[in-house]
Length: 196
Ligand SMILES: C[S@@+](CC[C@H](N)C(=O)[O-])C[C@H]1O[C@@H](n2cnc3c(N)ncnc32)[C@H](O)[C@@H]1O
Image 1: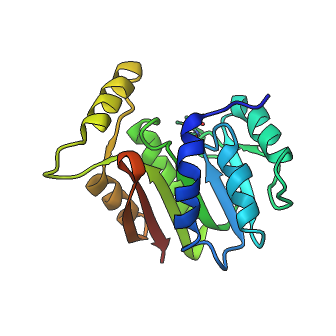
Image 2: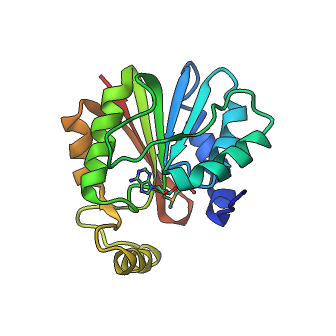
């Protein structure tokens, strides 16, 4: 049942370090695109005072639950379906939304639905954290990200590394106020907005 993504092994400690700066005091965290479930299983035990709600497409739920059942954490809910295309979200309210390595996989239309949905469920002062590769105006993409982007677009022309400025504008339109954009290993970024 347990799927394994080597990238999670590489990035989870760095993501933990960043989340440690924004999650204290938060109570309910919704994860979008939980994938294998490795991040939920690794990260949730580090924040025992919040409840972690993993989600993904139906086909990934078995792996997420297998990882989370083997985790020492008592604060992870059974994984729920959240398909951004449907607009149906399994929680009505939360104070943190996390979305790791997913924005470049989904179409721009679904990125828009992601931001609208996150803004809709987040309570005031709630945080929206994303991790992944981004492109910046007037800055060439690193060679590794150029290759990754070409691979993504060959696989699915609707996917691809997003422009930070466009994503940040989408956040602003949804009343999500920019907090930080931090460089991470392997040309990735940690970006955070706060709901006002
Ligand atoms: C590259 S994986 C990242 C998974 C995990 N967050 C990680 O870092 O390993 C992208 C994830 O997006 C999910 N995804 C794709 N389309 C989606 C959709 N329409 N709604 C929600 N999640 C979707 C995939 O199922 C997959 O788990």
